[in-house]
Length: 212
Image (cartoon, rainbow, N blue to C red; front, side):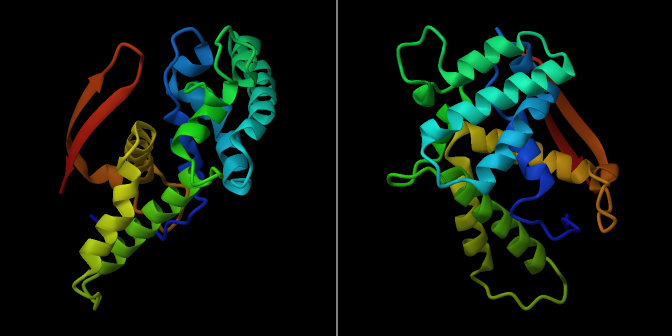
């Protein structure tokens, strides 16, 4: 199946997918449903893409402020409580930027490269580059070298080493297939004729689909 569009590193769907894939937390409404996670964390993912040179702790304040403001605007229950958790005001003894469930914590654990934290962004660039290379190679008129598959695999492989990345990749590909905001997109989801969906207790969905 061709992707039917040239994917960009800062694609709108990229930040949405990473936002939806935030770890589930039963105690906060804003973290129970993918729709709410998308509302609260898409702007923060965009901020991270544009400012990936910051230290992990420097994302605490922007995350707290953004979550509180959006939760208030969208009437998402317990927004102040989630904002405090993002700032590090919970009862946890570890620093907030090392709390796996905070925005800064995800960057700390999944984005560290030496003494900096651009890893999530870098791995996303590799992932998108791999998809574009694969798409180009599938073109019947392509004269791609025989090492293309190995190159694509190498680019995509970095995106399978963390649960956040695996969830985001799945969400991204499904959203990409369903997207019709780009006039060059053929809305590939219409081609799907078989699917199997698992619904988990936390409200997340996992869908396996086959297309012609």
